[in-house]
Length: 248
Image (cartoon, rainbow, N blue to C red; front, side, top):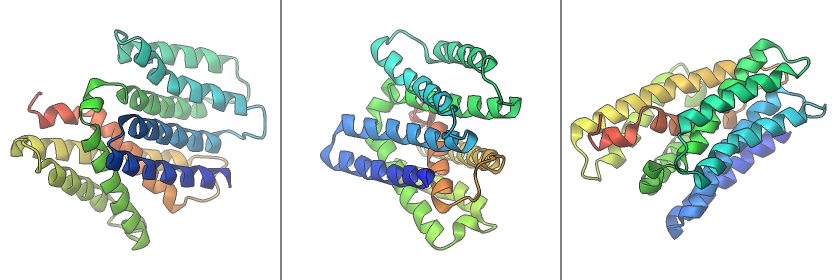
């Protein structure tokens, strides 16, 4: 039940992004994006750990570590995100050494999910993000609407979902990028790399979910926001904004 409430909260935060676009409010959109990333991580961790037990402390520590990239990089601009991530990995591995009843597979899953959200929250403090926030928010809302319609028409669970995921991102990125003064080749390269990485990362998220011990069923909302997080991470991971500007 709590997982379902978290997914509804992600929709509320997505509406906040729309409001931020209409009001041209940078703080509102940034807060909503960070909230979506942390809510997604919370929902994933709850499926890994039984929060009714003492393991809720582990969940809280992981969430604080994920948010630390936003806090540290906001106050210490000279700090490199890669250096901070290495320190994070060392700390997390040391932390899990003192935890009982947590197997190596669960540690690996949690570490991967933490790194994804950690890098994403760090991206929300970068210059690239602040200079392109309206563009990123528009792409996010467009893909959310597209995936919601796909779920309604059952494309989400058909054999064509991987083709739909790839070409959906491809069309959205190419479509909105065409309104700016980007070169056609740069647009195509950025769209293909983002679409490919998003599809593969989303598939990896789903595979991790099937390994969960506490998840009894997968719902539409899980697939949608897994895909949206994969899309946001892909923009950062493949350096799509620089590719659009012809900076390789």
